[in-house]
Image (cartoon, rainbow, N blue to C red; front, side, top):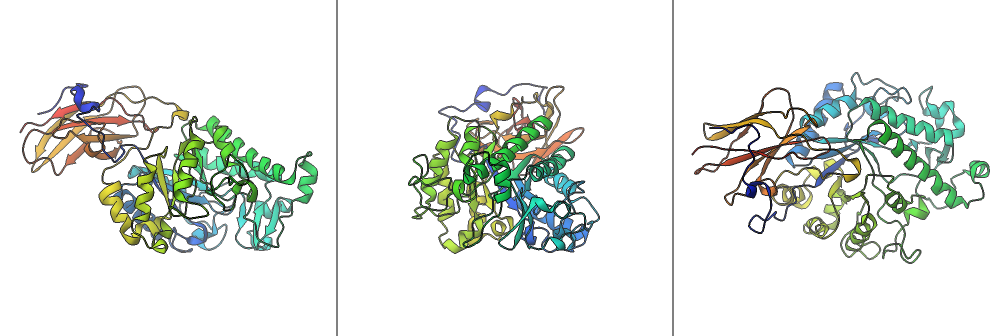
Length: 497
């Protein structure tokens, strides 16, 4: 029982045909969730937990994410000009110990990366670029905080503190702080959400008049503010690509760029316009190729009058058309119970299949795992009933590993144990995909045949199929997959009956 090194499977085993349909569940799909740390929304559940308690909480969240067959988590590691790692630029986050600057006794980011990767989950660092504090008194920041050392960088607005996007030194500081995490940790991505200039509050003014006088250069205030955000987005992307071109860079903006009533390029909506309200020209970032993916927060129902989900998905799909920028959708898990219709979120996912949507990110992890109106169960039994590979991002290039070697199979009790060794040379595998060919002889193109995605380790690799077909001679295929998710040719083995 076993197979020779590199022996290819029959053609039908690795190629789709009319006799081997791919099926309704895509084999490649980003399945993500946000883990928020600001104000201890998700993790840690409260400030001041011991290191062991924090670690146990995160392990639990990651275990549940993996059990739901997610493949990416977006962890907030710079919630407010602070850090979830020992940063030379900014203090330890208060959301760890309860005291800004307090050492938690371990490196949370290193721990999170290792634990996520052990479960074959991507770990994307989620950063807030401008928020300094959720309260408005600079004196309450830890001594030596950059915002106290450089008060000219900071504006108070709506009872909070922000770095002024119009101050070049503040922008450079933000980019340097983020790049410290990028260069020192094995992140899979760098992620912003929708916070750029603060959302407008009636009766309040963001006081950047002095900076506008100094740097406006004849532009309108609105155009100058947009250019400030553009510069941050473009500069950070260039720095990431120079340092670690495999790290994906993406943004999850407010779901409306502009309304068609304001701009013929806009969507058939009537809500707040991020282009005008928070100076985020998200459409431009896609068209200019400054980001690798866009994940608009489409937190509304199908048919909602001001901003219908079924209007915005096609609009964003057309925005990414003709670009190499991928489209994910930010989904409001926290609103499922409020909507009261158990079919609403599943209908979002069904609608996505008709457009250029490469996956979904759910806000937030705890609300998703709470199974609102049975939605997590629906993911588990329907939309996520098989594992999924992350889609390849063409912008990042890369090549697949070689085929796995020495694939062998043997019966162990009622199961089948597979063993193999890594490819020799070429691109290193980050993980392996294990398939069981179905009765029709279909192979790696059919999502239903994917049994497991298993992180690469050293030495001989092992996997046990605990529920093989009770009769017959099952066939298995194993591929090696790079960290950019390029898949090798399959290696096949058949188990004797």
